[in-house]
Figure 1 (cartoon, helix red, strand yellow):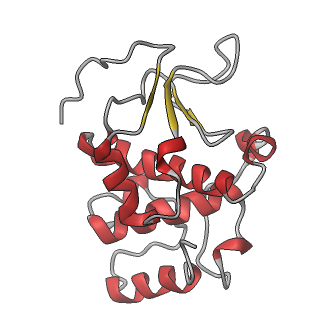
Figure 2 (cartoon, one colour):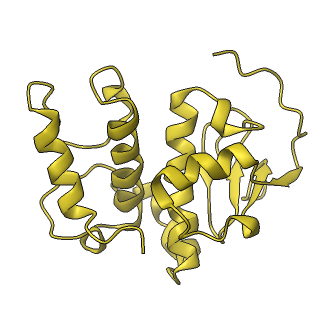
Amino acid sequence: MWEGVPMLKRGGLRLLTSGEIRLATELYRHSIQYNRVWVHHGSYLPFGMQENNTAMTPNGEIWFETNVYRDDYSIASVDYQHLFMHEMMHVWQYQRGMNVRMRGLVSWAANYTYRLDKKSLSGYSMEQQASIVSDYWLLMKLGFVKNKRMINYKDYDSSQPVKGLVAKYQGVLRGFPQ
């Protein structure tokens, strides 16, 4: 899908689009205060320290650098939708009191990969939680077979029945979102 030139200039900010809210409710339902989520086109960090291919969500607001910013993630390619769903998890975490900003300071060293071997989502790190929920969204929406390059699940095996994989995710995600 051709993404085009962003309408929002670098340094600008906007609220979520109605399409992005619909997209996010597929996973987060009404557990996020969507009207409080600002989307920035640019760097959260000073002096160009945020890489052009990264997003950050330190305080319930999402900062997408130039190479990953889109005016509406609901009509963007699946790669960008997956990234959007990952960042929305950090919004969800922030709105539930997690100190995302402090934990994010060490995210350069964080492990985004995971195994589905814990009893609940709370047993995983901040970035692993975001990877799990965004990967689950991808699994349910489009499956992993054609999208495995995007997932962080260490034990993915395309010969494994999808039903069993869904059950593993649902076991970890029991009670999510709240």
